[in-house]
Length: 114
Length: 455
Image 1: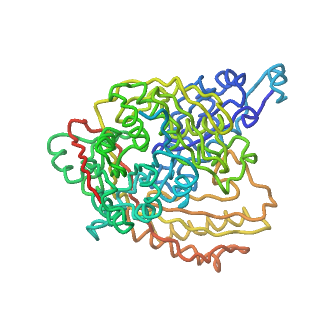
Image 2: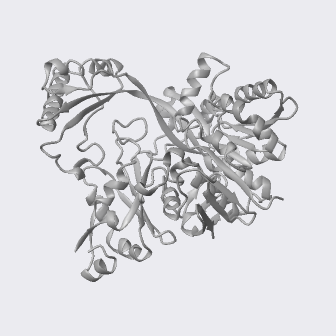
Image 3: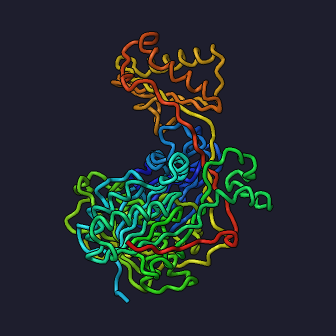
């Protein structure tokens, strides 16, 4: 079954030039491996279609139960060049939390997100 | 050596809560107050100010703040690190010295002036010698924008700040320097950490990263359980309580609002993060994948286990340059059919701009209330949406084109779709774009300077 990330994780995003970074943090330790499995760079790139024009890189921080994504060419030039309301990428965090991932019935049940 | 050092974040950016640093001083015991005044393009603003007035070019707000807190700082031996110096660190220090004398603190305050970051005067010479200062993102050489450069400053690290503290400075004022350095320097000074103790330097750097955005670590912008964050009206900015072994606790003053919990600290740890294995600073390369967190009590998160690697041979340079002009205009469309009306207005506006033959490098239309933050992920708005703000921005090298655009917004009220309001702000302003050019420069090219003056 499909579960929206907002039920599984919290997030914060920021900017580095024209790149938005999104940190995705598991709400419980046992959720982290599921994020690693399901929230791939490719899927994130697909999720941000029309927004992220460059590559997506993914980094793992198992010590924090977190993944860090870099969404290149997402901020309309970034900084002062950008015309976007969210030139600093501060709402990319919640945009990522809209994404749905597939969990087995058992996984969803044990996490009580079924 | 003190057993523990408390470093309080005073502000997360220039324009943060004006009271925050005062409340940090008055709210409980602290040893240091760190303040960040420099966003990426702040230096260009300060360069302009100095070109009009040689005594200007630093963060003016810092001076009245010092007037407010200096007596308490002197009495309780609280030291201050701040990059408030901008492009005129000497000017800033003189103004602070004046304040100290006015407060009757003559002879009691030493001010450290850290300079050497400003390489604007040396740019031509460097380019001539083949130091290309290539853009770290696009790899273009700086020569492509050489006649548009407005400022050029190296991010100095903790080392010169440590020297200033070692030489007795109570207030250390820098120009461009890393925010993390403002926190790391006091730790190196107090605990005698060697410049090649990479693990400890990384710990101090990460401590700095956690508090450098102020309340963003202590309950502000907290996506985790945001409704439950207590009393944000009275949010306490974070404090690092550091030990000589490199471990530290993130906390805040008692009887303040906000919270310091593992999720809030994690959110700040991943903020503005690139490759977590390699967080590069002038002082070290910190590894965020080694950070361990545990609770030590209410609003006390202990941070330990941090490791890092040697610093690189380079400083990062922040260069700003003129990159054209932009303007943004907005109008609000109300029910019924608010979204359709806003879209129609956008088409009409663009039709007029086209007809006039105005050329823009970019035109961007957004519908605030519908899709400005999440774009296509927001889907279509509800047909009954009460109102939508049409927001159109343009960017061009041609100032007159942008200026002409600004005159096309208000007329839409009488010459466009109905149900429109939100134009009373007047004509949008044309803004000069100052863009940011990040580059690297060999450390051997830069000579940081430390001067101590006394009130």
